[in-house]
Length: 419
Ligand SMILES: *Cc1c(COP(=O)(O)O)cnc(C)c1O
Image (cartoon, rainbow, N blue to C red):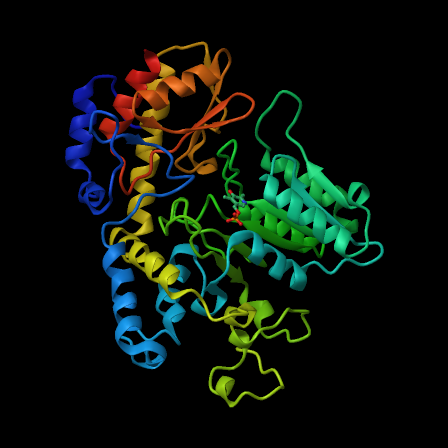
């Protein structure tokens, strides 16, 4: 794609020319045993800590200390509407309208809350379509939803599998599958980017195919938000959930996010589990017993949210706003392309990249299948100051992220891989 070359000077020049090069300094980079920055390629698992997070959290600690309950209204950033301070930026990251998104709970919890609204199986239209290689939590959650509705898991959950001998799903095969089997399907549940292979799915085409068959299209964007460019509203996605501790750098166990398409927001017949934080804001504190929903995604909120978590995520969202997703994505394509180039150029038969080489079908991550002694190689890499991860049975996942990784990181990584 670009004129990559093998020599270190290419990486040095590319880092020099990188318009986002100063963003690395906004993060704490863990150190190796010699006190040098590690090569941190695990931002797909837990993003690094923005240096500004401490001040954001300390502001809330200070207001709590000095104001107590009065902080709900009188904190510098009042807690009552605090989650709203994140809405516009979240909408921008996901290609949503502000009323379509909310940060709340965590991913798997949000999955269940939204399935309560959107999985409405009928006798002859009750199936859920899922990718065979979906994240385990998604399999458990979906299985339990099927059981909760009184259906048999084996005959109700249908998996789309890659062709024999292939790792990734072909878009055409997914669309054919929906076309052929769709009449009995109630809901499709897919990742935006598959956690294992790094394949980025064609969300818009999949959602369209679903709608032709009257299927609700839901997406798990754990590996998409902060990684790929999203247009959830225009793509007509029905609903989506994500976590904010991977590419979003919101911190371990960070508060999650949810999207509900505008077209569903005023459908008051949707079943929904309720709590007071979903109730109309102007009358919430009148403490009546009749529920009046907020006409936005916020009506899926149950509880008043954890402010310290929101503060931490807000610090990260401010960095994303400054960097912009379009610039991040542009760098990301280069960075991952460079990593792919160096790995291929080293002609190592023991390593197979299973992530699609088509850049429109992947984000930052490359998944490397290590044919022999993969686990040993992984442990060697860790002891050499490379933070990546191992996924059974034979894959090392590496994710150079454009916010804090550079071309020299990629070059150093590939040198260690060669050794
Ligand atoms: C990381 C991840 C999760 C994690 O779920 P939590 O509820 O945040 O623990 C779920 N699904 C996918 C696809 C993931 O990548």
